[in-house]
Image (cartoon, rainbow, N blue to C red; front, side, top):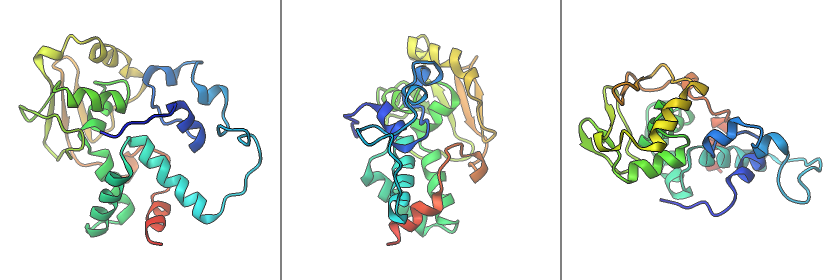
Length: 208
C-alpha cells in the first residue's frame, strides 16, 4: 500500500476541493480546507493562470488522491479502461469506484478510504463469505461484503456506522448496518460517482 507522507489536508487545498481524507474532521469547523480555501505555499493566494496541461494534471491528481491509489495503480486502471468497450473516462471511474476499500467506505463501515484500506488489509471484512484483505479487489454485481464477526465491536467500525448519516449510500449499493453487511446491487453509472472530476481531461492527459 502506498504511503502519503504529507498532510492530507494540504492535498484538498492543492486540488481546491474537499476530498474527505480525514473522516469526521472534514465535517467540522476544524477542516483546513474550510479555514484556508486556497492552495498551500507562499504563492497559494496569488492568482495563477494554468495551462491546458496543468489543468489535465490537476484532474488526474484529484482523482488519484480522492481514491488513494498510487500512480502505478492509476496508470494500470487507465490502461484497462482503454481496453474496455465503454467510454474510457467512465470505465476508469467505474474501476476506481468498485475497489473494495472504496466500497467499504461508501457502505459506511469506515470514516475514510484510508481507514477502509487499513481495515481491509487487517482482515476485518469478508467478500462473499471469504476473507478479503486486498483493498484493490474489484467487486461485481451481486457481491456481498460482510464485517467479520470478531470485528463488529471495533470502535472504528462502530463510530463509522454512527456517522454514516452525514453521507448517503448510493443507489448501486445496499447497506444493512444491523447485520453488518452490504450488497452490490449493480455496477455504478457515471451519475453515481460523487467526485467532482472531469474524467475526459484525465484521458487527454494520458493520450499525450
